[in-house]
Image 1: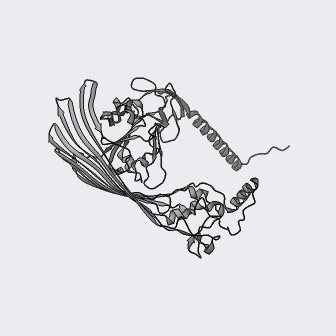
Image 2: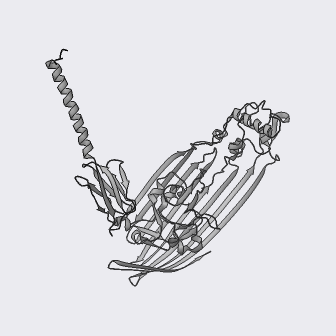
Image 3: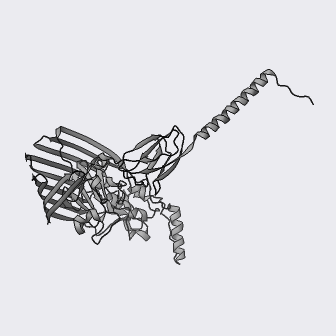
Length: 521
């Protein structure tokens, strides 16, 4: 057997390949060797373990959270930087290097804990709170394309369920901690100290902050009225500084991305006749019913929504003022629905002496509610009917088995559009005086009033539709008469508050005590 001898060129190529293979193996071994496990414990300023603290490799999505003992374990490379964070505490970043055990003590975020939160008839710093209170800044509400401020809370607060119906301008359903008392599920709203049943008259741009009180300890001061939770709203006031003019506008679009899936015309005919056979009845003759209509497509639209606001603020050492005006317009998800709102917010405060202040606040609105319709008929109407008869220029009726119970969905959506017109006015405000005396005492007297006037007018038109089975093929719905009905409702609430507050601080200790008397009519 002859032994094969490598030529010089082949030998060089073989050695080169072998060298590259060895380098590749060594580099892979090096990378594998560099990855290691880092463990440790995360504690607070009192050396207590933090449960659920976040540890993330900076610049990546690789991360873990601490367990019940504050312990963690994460795989990293020596060049990585770990970022430790926890709600209400300052973040820390530590480079791993040669360390395999990294224990971290997080410090309180003094800036966050020093923020003032409104609680009942006063305010407190976050560090002093023991109840479950969530603070929402006005900017988080104002940057949403919504006409109702409550709609902006959806998905923002743990334990608060907000369900938007999609109807233009309608109040969302809001439940705090899922509560439901004998008075329903609606929480109590407190706007600048005045009790309210809703806040749909407010402009989101005029809100400074919202505090949501969720647990019994924070709700106790409101008694039975706070059984379903309390939402405290503070409207904007001027801050010391130069006069400023703010103008902003936004617009957006809304649609129904996921419709209820329904069978088509062929599927409906098959299922309906199968039902009739099972009931021992003859099949329905669908001759002449050749439509294949998706009624949801017919009634839904892509709605337009816009918010436009202008505000003027100014303040000096003796006087401050805020003036805001807004216009909101929203189209509903169903055709022909539209809602508009004009708002006005005014506040003034005068510092008569260093210890005595007087002022007033006012929030008003003119609202034109939408003439809303429902989707119920659209999901119940048979798809075998056509929408429109071009020969008679009329909407069509539904087959015999449905027309006694419901009309063509477009009759309500189109022919009865804007037949209910409403015009609502709302004004809410207060006047107050504050007196600081004896260094640690403050007395405040406030008189508030809330007035609402709701006017509505409904017109019943004569409506004709095409019916192939009727004589002349045209039928009139209802009694064939027109009608007009009108209603007006007014409501006025008054409230007075007298509050005495004692505040003192010494060393690392502080004390705040409040006594007050409130009347509400």
